[in-house]
Image (cartoon, rainbow, N blue to C red; front, side, top):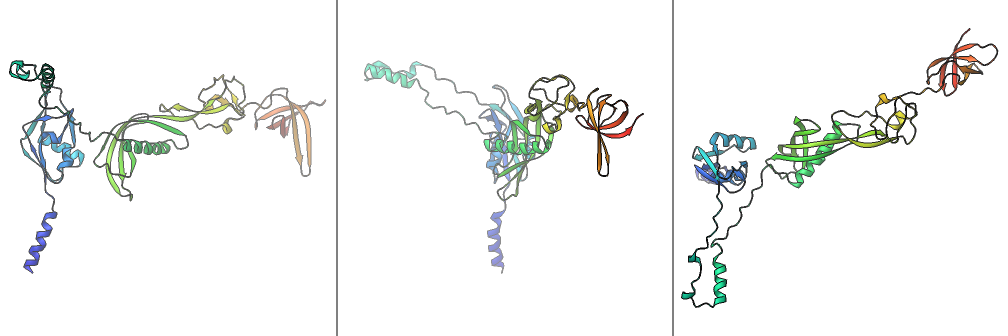
Length: 364
């Protein structure tokens, strides 16, 4: 039994994860325009590769330096969600400088062949002189490490799709479209299937917006959290006049068009041709002017001195009489009309349409 337990412990022990050890150098050199953890010293352990690639800061100007302390580095790892099981060793702080460019080789006489001591022909001597002018060691440009917050095409496309859904919910009932300029995305993992904007952390539409992100794998399981910084411009479908109109003109078919206008913080009114048809312009309006309900009123369907047919009836009979309007009015208004006959009687009627009304009560 004891032998069996010893064997079991032998196989179980390697499963435990080792700490990631960051051994800081006192002085370090940045190999590109960005400083990553890999530039600070030696990194070992299970997560060494992941930690090494993490972005710290832009590299200092040539001749300058930047200093990082252990607490500062610990805070950066905590922000990235990588601070667990990380141990620091070596120096308490590291000073980062920029590598100097290799100096160009000088054309000294030592690099030139001597005709007196060589048996090469003159043409070969010229060729040899050219070849010795090259540096002995080829200089290979350092590869730029990709910043952890760089925006890849997949993430930018997913952000645009999610933002469209977010704006559809924000401007429910109004057709909208958005222009997006993604500046920064912070996520630990990039192996996600779908991405959603789950809330606004800072800013407003339109303008600079910082949003919370949630990503999911192919089975719909939570994959990662993150944030994105972007600039958003929104255009909303807005009703406008298709032609210039004067005060008193009546809206008809073809007078209203829809076009996208830049959203500046004030939503357009939900006006449609159906809600405006038959209404009267209260002032002169130019073609292309965004519309407001205050620009229109209900027109008078009967004006003073217009003929009005007044109907009155009961069970099984209807009486009509020709009258003249004493004043104008709109549908549903109560106006006074006067009979055309010799009696010149007046009636209080309610307008039911253009040139028609129903009797309310008689006058004198």
